[in-house]
Image 1 (cartoon, rainbow, N blue to C red):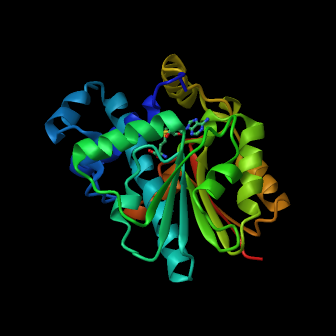
Image 2 (image 1 turned 60 degrees about the horizontal axis):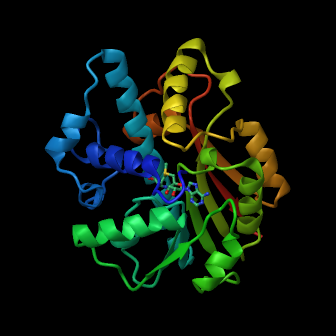
Length: 284
Ligand SMILES: C[S@@+](CC[C@H](N)C(=O)[O-])C[C@H]1O[C@@H](n2cnc3c(N)ncnc32)[C@H](O)[C@@H]1O
């Protein structure tokens, strides 16, 4: 991230979730606050969709559907955890995520952890959009690269001795491997049952030539705005790491299968390195 600036990729993903609410496409994720927090009208969102080539239109749509699907996967996991008795939700690298402001469970505490610059900007956006801060929400500003999650959450009165669900969407690719491993260890050390949902990118070497072209465009774009991708995993790598840390269940989905599952269609074939999202659970 650029020093003193909020995350620009957080705005990009917020725009995608907002556009998903109004675009002509199957609705995977419903978020009645997505447009308000993005601070943009549906017409302005549509104007930003400048792609004219069919390939690019399709690629943007697939990306939007994945962002919608990973949010749905995370919120479904939260709902399951809450039904099973969990009362703490931690959104890591929250960006403009709106779960905390739609939280249907008054007795569930939500902790939003984010880089201090992004969190300050989000608070201004919430204020500008007239979105109230619920009493169940606590902000915990943390720079993962130079502050500990343990200290940030302790200051927010997060309870390490009670179960929790952690959601970490669209973040780990922007962090160094050591920082990711430290955070995974912290989550694994939470009182059980603990669930963790996050998405990750495969190394470029796994991509087909067509995927590699599209990926290079995206990688260059995020690097050009000061948020380069730094870390990559395969499904086997990450499953081994999680199991060594004590997670006993890993439910890993790739983007085509995740999207197809929600839409009740056959998954799109031909991709060898799509983004993945997983839910890791430590039950004991
Ligand atoms: C692509 S955005 C994703 C935001 C949100 N989770 C979503 O899905 O829309 C990346 C998020 O990671 C956060 N982030 C990046 N580097 C960080 C760091 N070193 N410490 C804390 N947060 C960081 C950014 O502030 C931003 O909120």
